[in-house]
Amino acid sequence: MPSGWGQVDDAVSLRAIQAGLEAGITLFDTADVYGAGHSERIVGQALKGRRDDVVIATKWGNLFDEQSRQITGADPSPAYVAKACEASLRRLGTDYIDLYQWHLGGAALETVPRVLDALETLVARGKVRSYAWSTDDPARARAFAVGPHCRAVQHGLNVLDDAPEMVALCEELGLASINRSPLAMGLLSGKYTSTSRLPDSDIRGKTPAWMKYFDNGVPSPKWLQRLAAVREVLQSDGRTLAQGALAWLWARSPNTIPIPGFKTAEQVTENAGALARGALSPEQLQEVERLLGRV
Image (cartoon, rainbow, N blue to C red; front, side, top):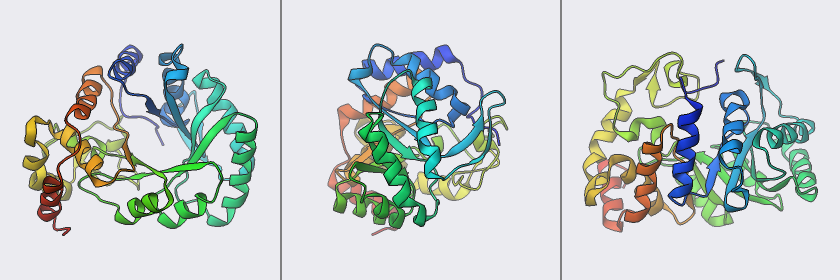
């Protein structure tokens, strides 16, 4: 399987990360498999000399070939954790990872104790400061949270696709709710319509099993309909659609930390601009829930 989001320009990516730093962004989330290692290298290059100012979150669990940029499988074994960590440290150009996240969201629960042991060894060695599971299953997140240095769960959450059980779990256990796909794979940017078609080089154009919002590169009518229902509320108070989507997440729970993806400095600046306007009001939050039939 190809690992990427279409054609990218490293210089554009570096400028985008720099724009994030200038806007006060301090958390940068990536994964070893993104771009088959290339994303970690770019993040490391961009953050060189700023390491103490930022939080780097990355992930492990998938196997890939850096030359062909192909995903070749997965390795859920505890033995693989240290090997993957060392490779990520080299690519990132750092000697520690702030938040190390297991990328295999459906891995078997019986492997959890040994994986946690492996992670605690990395913490003791100073290679990792904290860890999390990137999973949409609250039972798996709860099982991982017994680890002494488990600090978060990364899971899907956006205004169109709520995850009430996972949000409640994060609040109960004091975990950071790191929100994957806060802009619904770009659908909440507002630039895609029913006539949009993404290229096959973009992972949204291939429709892997986990893809919700696009069907072979075309936005799903179901999700476009939901977007249309709440667009006006999200764009209130001078927000762009993307800024409104982020504002909903901050209103949703005090534990939420959205991690919107980006390609350009302009996208980063727009996303960061949401901070100035803050969360949706309780009344706006309630109106969104009513419009989506979740009340």
